[in-house]
Length: 349
Figure 1 (spheres, rainbow, N blue to C red):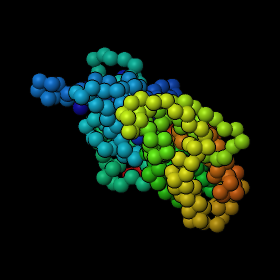
Figure 2: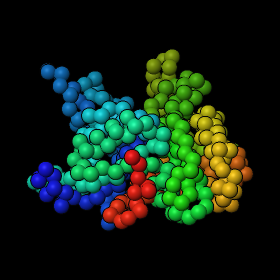
Figure 3: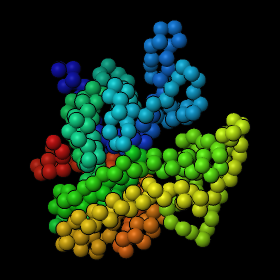
Figure 4: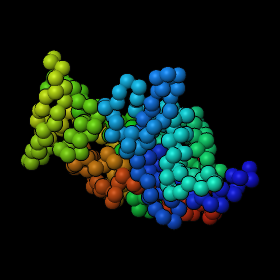
């Protein structure tokens, strides 16, 4: 206990956006200092069968689809919650040490604020809490992702007006209406950037007879992906494996084809937004109609997603500045106020 107290003196408070696709860490007083893929690479010893983690984050992600038989890549977070507790704890421990930027005698023992999906169950929240403790945290606090996203996007959550935020992450999309420092309505759908990638993979296999991996699908999404028809048709040449011949093949895919591939996951997000508008109390819905809808998360970077939601809802839609870091930055702002009265209203139990 004494060592944990002493190491806490040499540790900075952290806000962590523990996402399915990426983990971001905000250090109190410094800002976002780490943005890494939530991926680890695990090697199995051919002699005794023991497994050990050999790479984390970007280094591990670069191995996706390129590993020999004794090496595998794992994403310990699925749909915004922990799928593998032990690996998540080890990944968190590694990232926390990197965020502190030093080795030394004392293991970092910071206070940690973790952003979690609004739809997380008590069991899932407990798993996240315990994983942070196992990674060395001396105190753990939880905040709902849409609240953190709204604060990070600069939405005045303390006002007596309704504001809607749509946070599109790797595993989930969160839709929430916020007023007076509280969440009036929240819903989580298990659709996000990962579903975009898998939809592109399925489309290419069905329509081109070619198998591609997640890295290639992600490249297609980022370079020519779109959510709304455009007069400008973009093309991209990529490589995959021909299903029948089993040989590498190049092919060209265009933005209209990607749009067709993304119809199902995009429809899921649009339906969630429409349902939120229907379920929101009339006065708050009127506020949202006046203020518009704010998009955050990595999925908000998909070209013309704001246009699609605007077309479907007839409301103004704004993409937040630096949407990928909104959750981590919002958690960081709460972290800065952690010792002040009233901040407990933002935290989950």
